[in-house]
Length: 451
Image 1: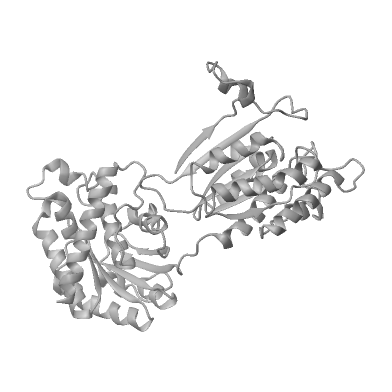
Image 2: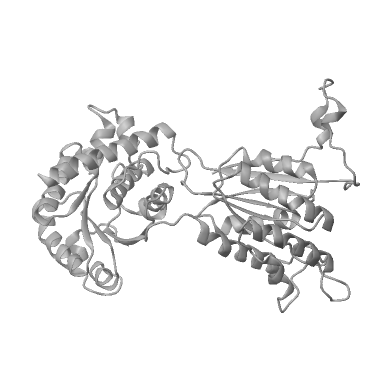
């Protein structure tokens, strides 16, 4: 994600070097303002290869900016990008409306969670909050608004914070008329059995901040766009698979694909294993057979070792397929690339034996060996070949594992990986080429299986 922080700049600085602007452009404040005001703007948006998540905006006073915004970002990291407009300007200050317009013009937010009341007086809340609501609705008509009554300050006499109660009461009517749901942070703090404030009596302890963040996250989550039920996937394989699992390459593709189901990958990965050794390992809880029988999987992905022949693979492919089918899951055969020194014969052998297994058993196939062919092109250079491999020239490197992940994602979801998330340090043109090779091969393999 991309984060842009805009520091506060006093309004008068904007007019330096602009002599043609008249005093009529300045706000005519009828009330004294704070000697020092602060504004923090953090805009978080999607990177080109990042997750396609909805945008959430927090608007509020320093309680929002200094406390629960960071916790909320962490709580929603797999669900949304969280931006912040934190300001000391009070409701009723016309400059507040300009700050809101500035932020809303830069992104299309799905949810806007806003809260005011620490600064300013009751008159400003009564007269100014309708303008705040109207401004937000005008500049973010697609957004779902959520109002949070401001939190109380600790009182020396231990009583209620009458000033905050009055402001929250004045806010209740315009909020209700606008049909805006309420996240009652006031009650969370006021009714909590222990004091949540720090020594200053305004901001909060670590416990208080965590409680505020958790409630805001729980309030926002139901309003985020719903995704289909996650797919549960078991991968049975060997040392060709760890980079896929450890880097969450498949899961990240799903997260970045708007409207797609999330994917939960579990691995039964044993270095050097064949389908035969996986089968003969028995039915213990950590074996492939035990995990297949013990989990409610949507898909089980079977990966055979690079040196296997049809005679080695197919008898165990059939047995695994029957076990997988009996549990209600679908079998996917994952054909990897071979080692560099076995190019191209070993790659083509893996293509043939996995395609044959898929045709015989009516299962889908990830044909990564031929996806490698597509990416490498005819007569590839040694440098291009090695870009897909680890230093040992036997196992896939990150680029090779990513083309694996794109192919698996295409089979699991039926959707294209083109334009979806890629590792942060992967050049965009490389990511696009790997995605395209995997998708084109998926389409060709799917057609071949149907013939």
